[in-house]
Image (tube, rainbow, N blue to C red):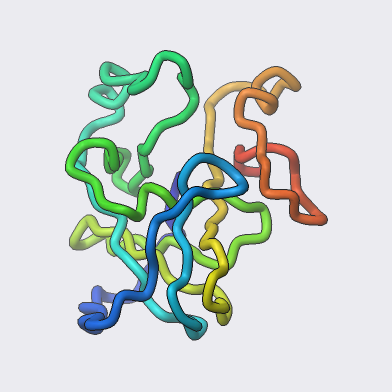
Length: 165
């Protein structure tokens, strides 16, 4: 996963006093994150948290679950490191991928934080998604795309969670 680069200076998001989202079983994959009420476009929903580690360390830890070697909670940062949401992470790690997302991730590079925010108005009960845009430094073969198969069901689903090359 990677975040959209944010050139603007860091702005502390507003304190959220009302629960906006919760984790429940997903029809897409495993657990998912759902809206507890209507959420307006632009609303910051949650910070993607976990231990910040090098990719070398991420590769050493990989896979977290040998039965699902391509399922991780790593979130790439612009500085070349990543957040391991499986290590001291929070519920943001349960947000699933979609080729037609209703959320996006914004990285605050100066403070090494990633915020998930609503791309559009989201209705109460909707599952939250962002486009993981996974980047793998090898040719995208049919086999590789299948290993990162997308299950979102969007009309224009690209069939994989891998980013377009």
